[in-house]
Length: 112
Length: 114
Image 1 (cartoon, rainbow over the protein chains, first blue to last red):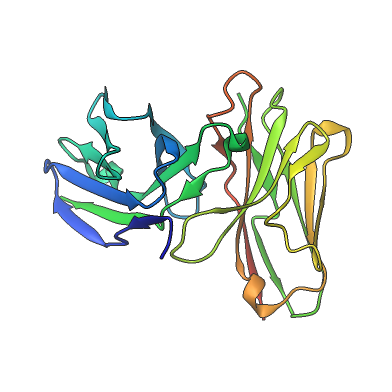
Image 2: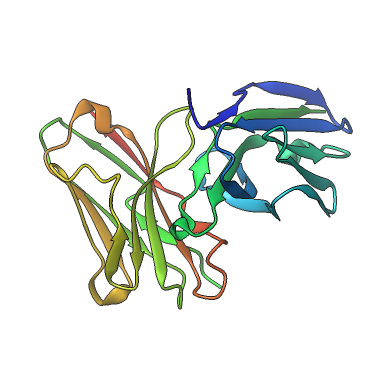
């Protein structure tokens, strides 16, 4: 079993829909949680960063962390075709030299 | 601000041949990472540098992979000899000293081993 599980998709939604992307993890020592967006043929770019449990909002994006369930989510409101990309969750322990453990990524397509 | 630069962007080689990838991090970033991303997977860390020192190379297959970061700026990752299973995208990332949780990724080098 992988430390971080993520549904690979693909997930197809109409423009304007609310998108929910999720990851589960097995190691309760993870404390820092991130979401990266990766366009085709590009490197990942950091979207959201949260520490421990709770919510964080940035524009159309909301990240949620539920440590009791070992479950994290990324919500995208009013999705746009430009949001079409692969979304990777990542997490790390306290200390650990910033070593990130990534999920496999969920491929999202927002259609007109 | 220029991003992380990697070259080449694409490389096709025969198995058992050597190959090298180059990375120029964002100016002033002292931490540099090399990742490998297999198709349909997330990136996996190969090696991390703090300045010119390799502080985490536990995931680097040292029998065929090597890396260096002379003068704590540019870095080179080498594979010799390459195997079919090495086909992947090799990503370089860097982060600044005061925001080590923020990693900035380059576009990657897509390696195909035939």
